Image (cartoon, rainbow, N blue to C red; front, side):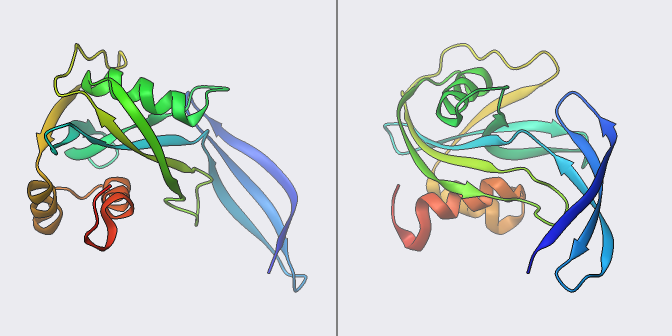
Length: 178
């Protein structure tokens, strides 16, 4: 199954993403359109301190009009390697410095309409944070939780963010430790 792009038109271009309307031809010859969010990609980090507790953040998300509990994450800068972005985002959002970093894989959060890819990492961080320096348009608060607290937050619906739930299971899947 393939789709060939016949034409595409940018209908919106913002600071972080653009939206294209694509005319496509299916493998059976039928034509249709696709609306695609083009995004540069992002990183998400499952960060563990030496005491075994995990570093998360709370931040307000305008799209869902709510404050969410999430793993540290952020958009790739132009030309930035995912590993570099993971270290940068940890320092910016939480103040924690990454001591070691291991890739966990790549997830595609919304393939029905978005080209975004999330590069997932497990990080060992120091015990204490330094000063955080979120982007000018972010308000982020660090949160430290035990594994049991993260599990309870997922079970209760306090932690609803899909990328955070996915990386938790990637890093801790089948009852194993990172």
